[in-house]
Image (cartoon, rainbow, N blue to C red; front, side, top):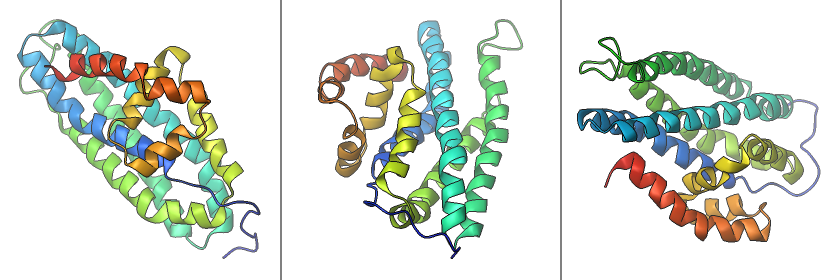
Length: 224
């Protein structure tokens, strides 16, 4: 342990990040099959919606990891006795950047007309599949090993700074989809913690009218 003491003040409820993780795990896992299905069906509108969705979820992943790089890892590195764990988390972020770059090449090719693009049969989906695996592995490690450190070593204010930064990165017009994406299959504790910082009127929207609009968004992406 370093000579820096854990923060004074109430310990944080870190369950909110599990909502973010569950949403991103699911969307990156589903994306390759949804894109190939829509292409095979010749559904250009659905393919276009999925390409827009890719831009959304990769942006969310980038901002999520950037917030951890800037706000979380430095605090934990200074206060914890787990330097190898923090180094591993950073290495996983770097590895995902490389895989994401490779996946972007695949997805960009889907959007290009002509013989070299448009989601041709035989397109190598390995980078997309590998990215989904890397995200799951990383989030599982965070939830199993990093969140307990956060609960022990950070205070509520320090933890909330991470969520505040994440919310600020979402354009207002995307907030309904993003909020519902994270809430879709989060566990009850994660839902409660995720909604807690929101003003009451926003919580009412996120659990009410936004859900109906999100259901339509999901039908477009997933078919049916």
